[in-house]
Picture (cartoon, rainbow, N blue to C red):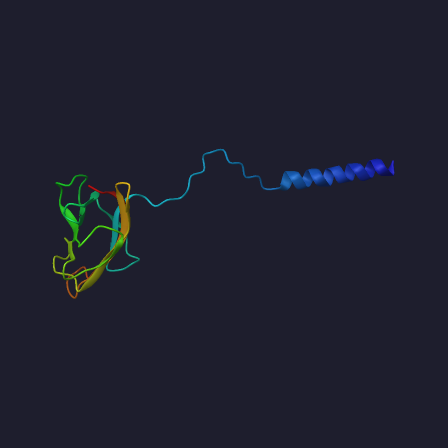
Length: 149
């Protein structure tokens, strides 16, 4: 009888351990977290509210990156970066690399565009620029998987 109670208690303890374990089943609905494709920026602070362009694209013919107010390239231009290339690299603003932002049409005092990837018809990277005057004196942004044309 002692053996019967011993086995029963052992079985109960093991059952409780198995029942209380955290089960993680892969049902195929889990997806990797990824940043959303598009063109975003912040004005005057890296913690300011995020703004999003209606559309954006890289034009390899002109070595330029554009962001527009609307969903087509015929809508107003928000940003235009004219660079010496569109390969992954850091492009310092000034000289042969130009930076246009409709919120401050003056030439930035400093800035850079960093293209982190340009492959499979999509480009990603970051940018920042500062101005010495104007209502908007700095912008910080990202572009993720924007079309390369």
